[in-house]
Figure (cartoon, rainbow, N blue to C red):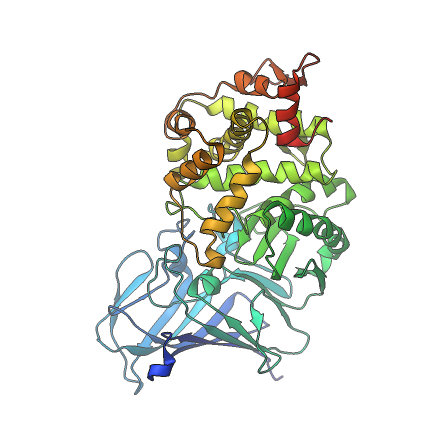
Length: 512
């Protein structure tokens, strides 16, 4: 019987602007061959340009195993342009040193997609690869060996074209721009986009719809199909709300890949979601029913907002900036959900439990107070998973306090909304901005408010002082009883002043 293969050809083009001066174009090409009878074994051949005699797979979020992403690479061979073998040695952290000064080499290797068989700690298997019946999910980092690059700092243009030769009934879901040259040819602008993008390949249905000039592609395996209309309805409300909040026109393509969690002998099913470049990956322990709608509203909102907070607005020290990237995203997610009428005011203020997870101001405050004082938010990101509640809930509690204080010193005129729009416009990477440091954030806040609020960062971000929650809630006309306890309760004061009411209205939309 004739076997069919899926061949994906990648042509990575590195060029220097100024072609008018006769600059040569450098082209790197990848061919990825997938055997539909064994989706776990991916064969790769490539011709790539080499810098500093090194090739690399040292991409972010690969520290769950000793050799990072290269842990899954087998049978690496390197040749020169005349097919003469080139010797190499493994150096460290998914890097190989070539015993040749050739500027361009050919490489062949296999990638075994067994990421779902190990404890993948950085984002879960939704941030790596997993294999289901007739389909697999992967991100580019799991597949590509290239030249070494600091992806978070180096966004130099490295245009990439990708050609898919698909066997019968196979499809691909990926956010890369489709080329005008031919239907199965796609274009990628940078190595970051190539490596940090999620994709699903195999036999599966998908839905494509356009909302506010954003093309949403929802891809799931067949057993997850019932969520597609649910997700489509969520994005119809979410996308316009997000674009309005950031005062942005982030048009383009966005791919959502959602599946039931991979079932292996090593792991039971669980929830996991990951924001990737122009894409998100979600796995769930069960096929969701309408009862799970609030949970998915929150997850899809949180991950979609990472297109701005985390991807477009990005901290230079990625780990130590995690409290802001995750905490601010959580805080803005709650505000948008409330504004859209999805999250009632009581749930916004006191929190709600959904499918084993809890969120809302009150729930975040409880989680933050349980760990506050032991480590600074700034340092907590160095071990994000171990300090989960400090990073996520602590960051969100800080955002609430900051929003209240910014509105308090400006009589309800300036708050987090203005800060996020300012950072997006001034530093957004999509429009030629740069990565930020905390000084940039603090300066933006001080400039917007016309007063110095650096002490908030000194005490509660860089230091380990505990945020005086009751003091700040009071400025918004809120009272808290039994703070940090299981029966904690936040209430709106019946005696709130007009100033307090104005602040609450500004941060939440609650009130007249």
